[in-house]
Image 1: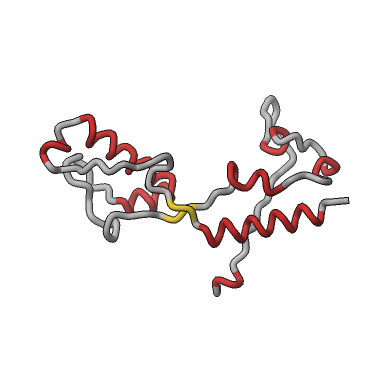
Image 2 (image 1 turned 30 degrees about the horizontal axis):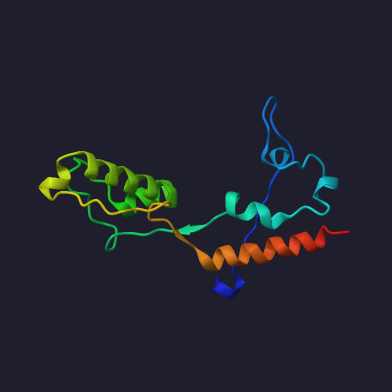
Length: 140
């Protein structure tokens, strides 16, 4: 699909299983009436933040020194951006707490607050606009 036709579709059920609190209830939304005047934009960052995968090189090389053949691409294929982030964070910890760093097998790179996650700005912006429009539709 051409990028200008991309859409974000979010569906949230108002029902929760017995003895659990669903996402809507946690936000104070128990009935459809609670959606009137609801600030949908407030839920985007904590609940719907999209990221792009960030690889070293093309991401297909196995990580040396760990006795594993898992590549960054394979971690992304199996676990998405968050699986890739967890792999990179574990490599960072391993490299800083073992002799692998001294042996030159691994290199510890500062990961920052969100690891190597890079925000998918275009998709997040589309979602911001969609949530803002949803607010207008539910305003009285």
